[in-house]
Image (cartoon, rainbow, N blue to C red; front, side):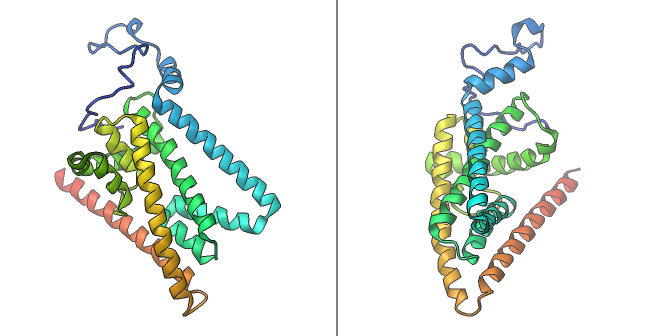
Length: 261
């Protein structure tokens, strides 16, 4: 992972009693545990490790529930799988728009969207932290984490200025690359305790999902009056806007990088 430009203001896990620290002079390895033992210790004793284990368990339970539902009601299960896939690939707005376009109600769209985003946060946030600490690095996630880190660094000052309320609002408002994972990384960079970080970010995420649900359901009902395919067209437009937005953002970032070189 590229060298970080800033450091977390405090890292409560690496300085917990019982987790040996590396000597700043990089002396003998007798002063700290081997890397495998460090990873095992972090997974078992650190808040990030607990968060990751909860995220994996929730993902397995959700997958098992989808499997049972596929056996009992395959048609509905396929629709929910489609909602999940669209939400993961294109974000909550597109996923929820898809759900409403295929006539799912609030009772399905809102809980499924909350579960999907919760799983994403509970898995990718601790993986980012472990990658930052060079305990567990996945090369195939490096570029993704780099983009997350850059976005977090860019928006860090705003959140610092308003504190927890700023972090909540940051996650709530649907700006580009300001989703819950970026919010968690900002909380980490500001030294926010992991569980408070999770509480604030997931709280903002759930409020955002409810707001999107009210908006998209209303819009879906309005456009459905004109054509039975209007809702699907709306969902397709959202996906195109999201793809174009991310493409433009990446292009702008690459152009700035070239100018610096």
